[in-house]
Image: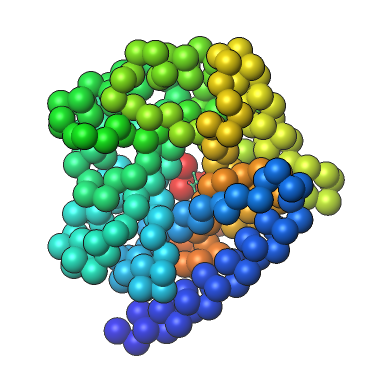
Length: 269
Ligand SMILES: *Cc1c(COP(=O)(O)O)cnc(C)c1O
């Protein structure tokens, strides 16, 4: 109990610090980008008590990247009762045979990781069967770093995937593009190439399909780089460890030879 109370205090403070940093980053953007970015609190591996604590501190958008964990937290009676206005984002790799499980989460707001036409079509028909009045919000995940272990469609494939969602998935509402990006990028080297790439991909998608650029959001930026992502036009940042504390590590640093923050995220994919 004590542990939870301690964390609650930290979470309130952590959220406040991040909100202040978001506002500062917003001020640094060019005038046309003055919209308010959405903060998604990534609660993967963290207990429901911490989700509830963050909710009580005013946080409404939460992200999970494991299907089972999202399902369990999202359906937890205490959480459902304590957080009636929760907005869940699914941000992990989604296999088609797990789609129904994700769609069975009350409060599901957005699936950020659509990366193939098949997955889009599966989500579309599964949502259609639910006969909801609203469409299911989705984003297309783009593998901007070209790393093989990353999911996401390639920048070159993005236009055709977006076209498929818009034209053939009538129960889906495409709200934007998402990238995870390379880990541990040194921001002193200039703008993060993944963020620059996602912006370029959006421009070319919008040009090819004759879409308004404002019609596609950008989901980019995590604990290490959300301020820079906001400055570059992110509208949806996904922040985990800065809010909830570092996650449990699965291998030692000496084994992997990679730096702490890097490893921390990488293993959770
Ligand atoms: C874990 C995760 C995050 C949050 O990472 P932090 O570095 O803890 O902020 C964001 N996006 C995705 C897709 C993740 O899997």
